Length: 248
Image (tube, rainbow, N blue to C red; front, side):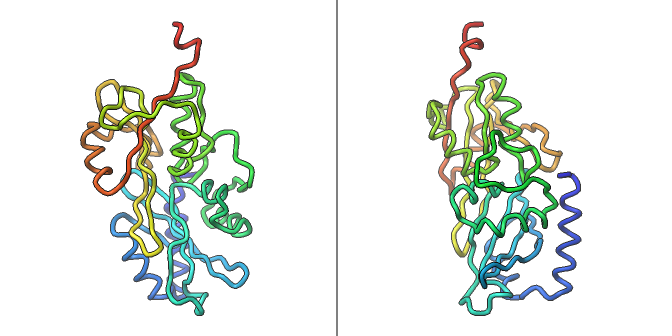
């Protein structure tokens, strides 16, 4: 399904542009997203408030952007960013977006899973950018640890609440999970986060949306830190191996 998603979004975006996407909103989005490719998916109204949904792709990562105060909300002074990340699940758990809006967002994205207030037992493979699901395929057999979230903010929260050992990203040992959470403000800029695993070759690896989320090498650890650490806070964690793995 994910391979077909960009084509679906381009079709929806073309229809929206034909209906007259507000130029102020378009200018706001272009300023708020300084890099990457962004596509308008549609608008949902709830209780007199309009919610505009966009999908953006920044290199290997893909995420969602929700803006309020757009074309169908003339009473608002100006548009503002409500939420941005690699999945909606963190927004749902933190009540950042009205629950009645999310099913319509999922429908616009062509995702068949139904959003639920209860956290899923494991991160679903069908999502905007299923980074948590990809991590589970590697970490589950080794550490017996599985993420419930595909959101960079959700993954960070799960690691902070687990018994994982915090480590400095610059001095992280092989096998460490490195997290750069998504950052955004009400006016932008928006920078999608990154979650990678440090290999024994001192290089970082993660799922690449450009290659159907296959595991890809993103270069040396120092290059990853230089790229993401200049303007964002980085976190490192080392999971504890399962007893049966530690004894072998």
